Image 1 (cartoon, chains in turn blue, red):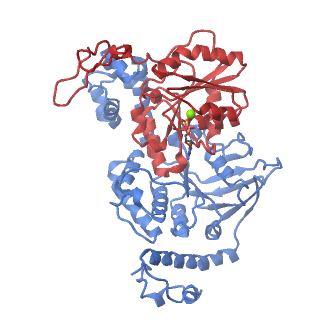
Image 2: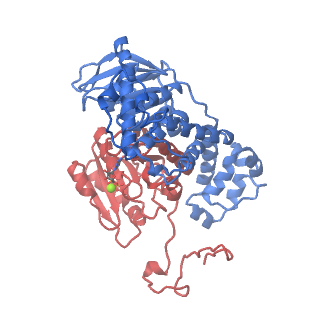
Image 3: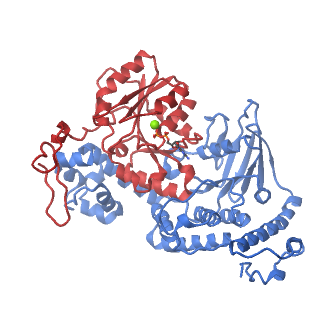
Length: 359
Length: 233
Ligand SMILES: Nc1nc2c(ncn2[C@@H]2O[C@H](COP(=O)(O)OP(=O)(O)O)[C@@H](O)[C@H]2O)c(=O)[nH]1
Ligand SMILES: [Mg+2]
């Protein structure tokens, strides 16, 4: 016996916000709350069924599934994924690839290789949690074992978020309203949404050289601002513990800071990239060739030591972008500006304030 | 022979998804395409080497046209020894899109249609077994998540798959789901999941004059907030 169908609606109403949502969204006539849903459906006439395009039985199934699935989403706790293991398959010519390696949460695995070498295919295998059922024959294990089947097909249980260069905002909303919608769609408790949203905006603004306000329309943000907002939003508001990044370079965002932001939220990050800065910031580098994983490099000290130099050049470049944007000229000595000894920007205080923002 | 129905608003990516499916399915399959006025999909299917037929409903309701021709389509498939037949129809009024009992019903929608779209589409989406969301490559993660939740609200019973109609990302999951659900069409007659909307009014029979005196048959009056409820005549 299905309790949802045979409990008076009034009682369900008090217990679950989704009952009111159901009637609002289906445009069914407001019910007498003393009735159960089964009784309510019994009292509908043929025209009312025709209007909603469902039979009594279908409506009852729909009602039950609606309440149960949304309640499950609301209850869902972020499942911790501590590690992702790739059991190698084969490359394009059919020869076996590197057999096995594991990436742990808080790690950044960069995926490198020439165009056509299979970077996107690897990201797709991870997204699909492949189990030997894709052309590569790879298998993906989470926390050391095969993922539960629902993680592969239930849209709300997918553990993988994606970011790429082609993605744009299309909703006609302000930054604040947009993030609120995202928080609502997670069915997070109402009292936590506001602060999460503020947190996303603050974090996004640390990533871009051009801060934006919470009232700005998301469709009017610049490329760098959009990317910064997407990254901060994915880090803080997306439930997915695994983040796949497909070539977000030259976007006018501080990429090292961005990766660190994701890692701090215990995301497991895979980034397909040609960008030396991102590649060097990674803790593992997966080298692809002809469709297969050729080897996995763990960057050594010499490489890690180079990050700060490259990162400082990158930040200096970002500041130059800001100047161009502000209609200023870059008429100072760039050799001096870029010289490695000048890790700070004091000498250029006529252009920048102490936070590095243009004056 | 197995049979799958694909429906979805125009240009949402139905043909693209069917083509990507063709690349991963090992069986020989054919497509029947239903449309109102014209359709260029046959060229696309021809080019991909997929046997196909097109039905143009013209002056008829495309969904009624679809149902009254399914039998003939199945026979075409049998004659051509197909192992799988896929129908592609545009679900033009968003109202019925005739899903059939025991035949996997796939509804395709694209994220660019706006977050409200899943709830506006009606039975075509609400009664589908599988919902495929396309064009996710063009929007942010947040928008994909919001759209997915609206889709779940519109059809909480459905399995929902994100598929990229261009690159085929996500197609393996869809192919596996269809394989799980597909059973060969039996000898017993097919049944619609729900009766199609009634549309027998004076205008169905060629009435051109406008006004309540001329509207007869199954009609429904609109409801205005400053007046009493509309009525069915
Ligand atoms: N970016 C992108 N474009 C797509 C995707 N799926 C389909 N399209 C494009 O959308 C347009 C309409 O697709 P089509 O399959 O003909 O839609 P149909 O009318 O539903 O059959 C075509 O130009 C496709 O290339 C997708 O996932 N991403
Ligand atoms: Mg088409």
